[in-house]
Amino acid sequence: MTYSALSVLSALSVLSAYLSPMSLPEIDLVVYPDECDAFGHLNQASFLSLFERARWEMLLRGPGMDVFTRAGAWPALRKTVIDYRAAAFPGDVLRFQQALTHHGHTSFTMRQTARRVRDDTLIASAEFLFVCIDREGRPIPVPPEFGEYMNARRGVAGQTRRLTVHGVNLAVEVHGEGPAVLFVHGYPLDRTIWHEQIDALDGYRRIAPDLRGMGQSDAPDLGYGMELYAADLAALLDALGVEEAVLCGLSMGGYIAFEFVRQWRSRVRGLVLMDTRAEADSPEVRRARDAAAATAREQGTAAVSDAMLPKMLAPSTLAERPEVVERVRATMAATPVSGLVGALGAMRDRVGSEPLLSTLAGIPTLVVVGAADILTPPDRARAMVEAIPGARLAIIPGAGHLPPVEQPAATTESLREFLRSIG
Ligand code: MLT
Image (cartoon, rainbow, N blue to C red):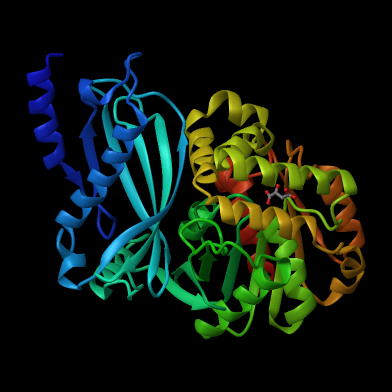
């Protein structure tokens, strides 16, 4: 392709922005030859310029490029973390997506990803922390117009809310009316793993938050623990006016559900323990958590989550369903480093829940496990069912550690049957 052809393509692509309802515009930018190094790859400095360009383009389509100057504020970049995943070359059209992952009083964090349009390859993901300053360099509040624009355009139209609990802003999807079901995702994932169940389970009030540090919720640097995750959930239910709910926790979501039962037992109408375990970490697993945290700090989230991916899914999912593999990979890789490291520490330090199991007699409990789960295998689920008086077991064929995503229909059916049985 000639340079002039590239220029035309660039002009066209800069004009094209894909705006799905209530989502932030996706910005397409073309890689130019003069942005590449001697080996032909897009160089780092130019990549940073493209990320910045995409942010300006987004403002242009939203509150205006002068939204900060109008407010007498300047977003000063304080920290950048970039995860380069694949090379980009002249003529590649990169699609930039942007999301606000933290919205504080004077600071905010944006996560951006760049994917090659041709083959949807993730080329890089980045986090940018900004502090708004005035002309003298003093921190001043983030312009409300900017915050409102960014917040209003996160998530599914009308169904994703932003609620602040314990000083942290959480994204939570709330659908339907009826008895409440609270879906708690695992690590390092987000609420989207429950989308099929949320869509299908009419007749219930389905509530699915992103835990602090994951998905579109704020990801503070410190302060993670099972007690706090559980307390966030209790505060969310309070904010939504929900007194009791069926708690459905997957893996780390199950660890949090155990903690929730310890503290707010009377609010638990029923319990679904999905691909989880009651035992605390062994010393060996604790050491592995610390090693994973160090890797994430040094090399970014993807270095940890990509290594974990093959263990998350059934062999058949890995071999035959690339779209599911990519969905899970992208969700995991998008977890902010601070949230990933926080969750690793929280899991490492959690207490064992074995003593709790025999006390669950009064709480209807369903244990669900993927038949091919190697992280929390069916034998472990069977042992949990034996230890919980009256508990039922559902083994989901063709699923590994993530039945809601790998076998959504079968998972939904087992949930529906359980929910019906408890009225
Ligand atoms: C999860 O899916 O939440 C994790 O596999 C839990 C863990 O690592 O113990």
